[in-house]
Length: 362
Ligand code: AMP
Image 1 (tube, rainbow, N blue to C red):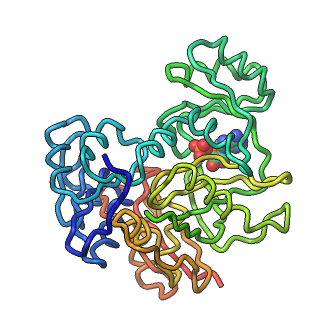
Image 2 (cartoon, helix red, strand yellow; image 1 turned 45 degrees about the horizontal axis):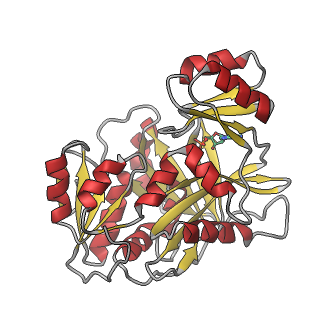
């Protein structure tokens, strides 16, 4: 696998592992640049496969299908951070993979991620401890971190799944009951005033371009709105810092592509919650902000092209359409202020991301 990417010509094929809405929007952005996409997902009707040039419908442990996929691609990326590393290795053997496997391995494991982040200059994270194996290990970690704290599975958690708040020592048994089958970490509870993120692109030549700080509001642990540019931070005067934090992280990983960095805004400054080695839900507003959107930036980076402009021409608020929200599409389609994006999912299960709407917010 080579880390050095050469610029791909129009007509080349980018392979996207993962068949969800992020892959769908990557494929749409690639098509505008005449870059073909081959998507790989586990469903015949995957949102990405509906719009990509070609789609392979196979499981992530089908080595032959992964090798066939890889052989048809000039560069490979992924749209889902829980993709098995082995699948990416097989698909990417002998060809360019971006973001690289170090970034993927780091982001897949909260313990590795926290260790990596905590060693970077100018980057703060919540205090954390490994708490795997036994309830006693969990008790020890809680005692060292102090109450309140949060137990999280090292792998696979998202949208608040795979985590448990521990407010008193009496909560430890319940946390162990739900999460104890998995390797865990314990994190100190961060007393934040709001949640924010930075979506940042890094090109093959090391050029970094960060979108403005985005403020995120969650409902039922799922992202509800993202507004950018965000209002200045509560601790004042340093709103350039999140961009510097994202750059430090991307440089340290020798990252190529778009990365999402989730942040807590606290009275003491910015605390990094986690990183996502992919385009990010809190960056969907970029599609309707009069600049190069995050999906095109990612494709440009993977293809070895120069990055586009990350500066929005106007402020935008993105609202996710979750579950039955998407049934409102006729109203939204009539609303001249709403830019509607639907993901092609047939079944509107509760909590499922079905689409989003972008609106100018100023
Ligand atoms: P995560 O899966 O790590 O993104 O966490 C999901 C949500 O849980 C975050 O968006 C926060 O609202 C909350 N959360 C996670 N970790 C902490 C923490 N250490 N302190 C306070 N709240 C947290």
